Amino acid sequence: MGRPQGEGVGGRRADAGFTLIEMVVVILIVAMAAAIVFPRLPAPEGNRLKTSARNLATGIRYLNDQAIITKNRYVLHLNLVDNATRIAKLSSTGDELPPDDNFITRPLLEQGVTIEDVNLPSQGTLSESAVKDVPIVFGPGGNEEGVTIHLKAGDKQMTVIAYPAGTKVKVMDGYQTLEGGEETKP
Image (cartoon, rainbow, N blue to C red; front, side, top):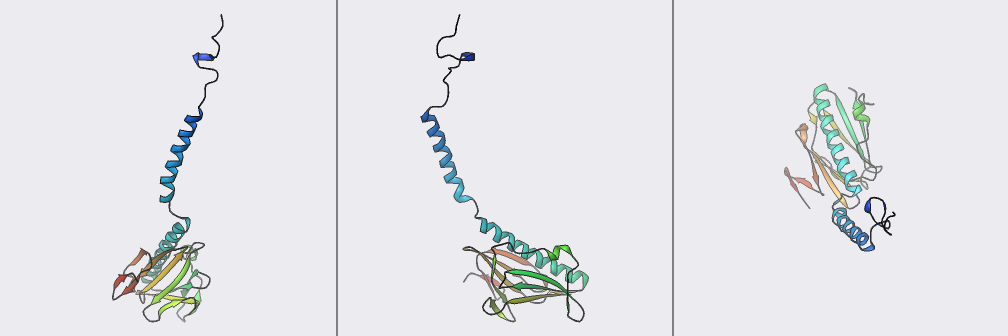
């Protein structure tokens, strides 16, 4: 006694599989799902920019705290040409010493993120064309003056605002300025 022709083991057809129509429907559903999800994914430069803004804000808060707690002076150098940061501890004579903390030595800005400009009340808005290095000093009272730092990656921008005396540091989307204590968009 044999099996009927075209029937496989367990009663299945030997030529069982997916039809072309079934494959097209599955591919169409996957393509529609990708078309909905893909535009909502954040761009890589947006992630690097947000990480850099948060790292910079965390570094500023940390320097404020360290300066207040240890009664030492620190300086955060923002290199506008190389788009890099460097932190040093200041000696009593004003000489820059290497920091003795591993947290302070890590890079604060991700690759591809640029420092667009820095605004200090005492010096105004500083950009790469005006100055290479912007030092921000943190003394026993914290950040000596407020600072606004604008970061850019691709076509996205973020603003880091550090208020004087270490009161707070804010990270905001877009290019924003501080006028009379209020944030504004130009």
